[in-house]
Length: 311
Image 1 (cartoon, rainbow, N blue to C red):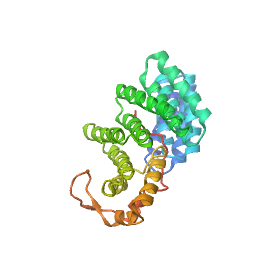
Image 2: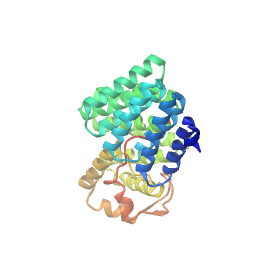
Image 3: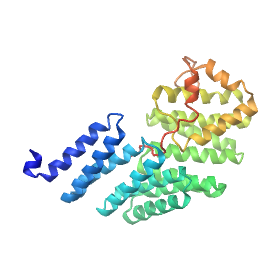
Image 4: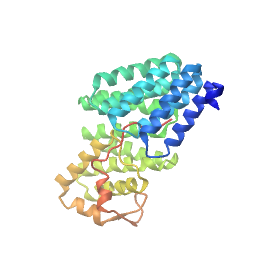
């Protein structure tokens, strides 16, 4: 009927609905294909606001894919959003794409994206793009060994992401700051940053932020030779396993690093303790959840795409 009546907008809406339905299934390809058709049809009828929904959903779907595929979808979404001047979407997508490029070791591409996010955000008074740019540049500086620059970028990211009202982004910036301080031996400062992540998880009621906070504190404990404190790594793994949310690609390298340090400095029995101990859902409470071997495996080799859902 829609074809017969040539209702172009209705056809675009139908493709958008197909995408939304497909996103609730494991069929990622069908969701992306329907989303691209919706974008094309909304573009055809000149509905710039209609374009915003499928573009945002395409970005969300990209987060569930592999990094290279995610980058391709984000590049396409960035181009579309820019063509129709959806500047709020542009700042977010450019920042997400930049973080994806960081994980793909594409430093120049990442900088290009952060420049775009910052340019749009500055022009239109949008703090998110600037926050994402500082967050990404903090990771780039940390990888380059520039501790001072990384610290400043993460601090600015915390400030700006607080203005956005995104607990997930604030927590990511705080975790980065904590790991920077740990790397130069400022363990009290590192612990403070990771404790702030836990407090944010509690006050914002975002349970998924608890595991990153515990992992950061486990790193501090390992640096201090505190085997009991390092055991919080197991509590974090248990939380991730029960929630079905493995570490994203920005978190995975630090988890691997902490695990190696714990095993080297505190003994090879650490992994065995993780498998035999049990944990509660909150640090400091009596144990009550066993940690299986599969749970420990969550900490290795199962990183998801770095693009967090933070809108």
